[in-house]
Length: 257
Image 1 (cartoon, one colour):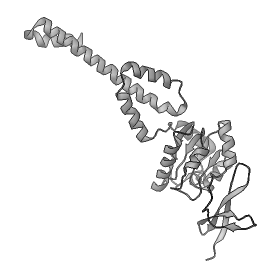
Image 2 (tube, rainbow, N blue to C red; image 1 turned 90 degrees about the vertical axis):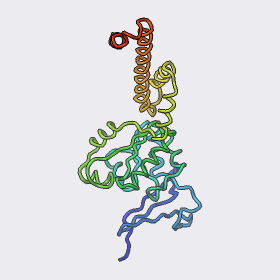
Image 3 (cartoon, rainbow, N blue to C red; image 1 turned 180 degrees about the vertical axis):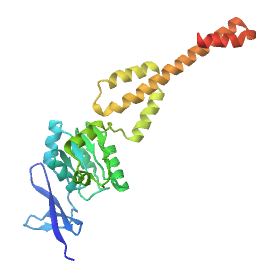
Image 4 (cartoon, rainbow, N blue to C red; image 1 turned 30 degrees about the horizontal axis):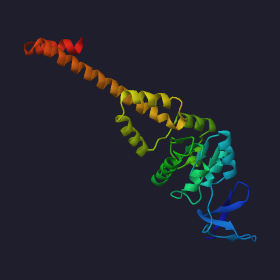
């Protein structure tokens, strides 16, 4: 069976020039190519730095504070644009994210929407981890229902308003390793330091939002530990004052008074 070109997705730089293209064939297959400067193509991206899909549009979106969906595939990106969102993807699919793509999304409000298979989900989490220290904030979007990706979800009747609600309800993302490091750091703090950290978090960038629940938990732990220590000290003092023959009665009085 002869392959036919089903779509050509152009990757343009900030000046609008085509840097490279993804060509989709039917039956489904893909190839990467770039202009050779003579009206033809070189069917390889070797020797150039690939860029994000729709780079001029997402760069403007970052400036305007418009959230950007990061998906797996140009078709998904285009379908999101059709229903009113800003979206991008990297060329060549899952596992091909580069540091340069992360830098292009510095300051973005990033909504990572992975494909639902294991490879797609891991790809999405890798992107979210990379973006955490560069983007203004990151969310990872889990789409409900059957289907592999956002195009399937839209085709099944998903609407822009529904997607906005899902995105709004999704929590701010924090990488697991960083979360664990932060938890360990909090546990080494005293109550005064925790309160200082809490005051800072109240005005911190939105990406630090998940820390609030962690520090509030640690503060409550400290409160309980301090209360336990005070009860213990009160009990010891009561025992020393009253003698061993009345320990049971003293214990009850110390703990519940």
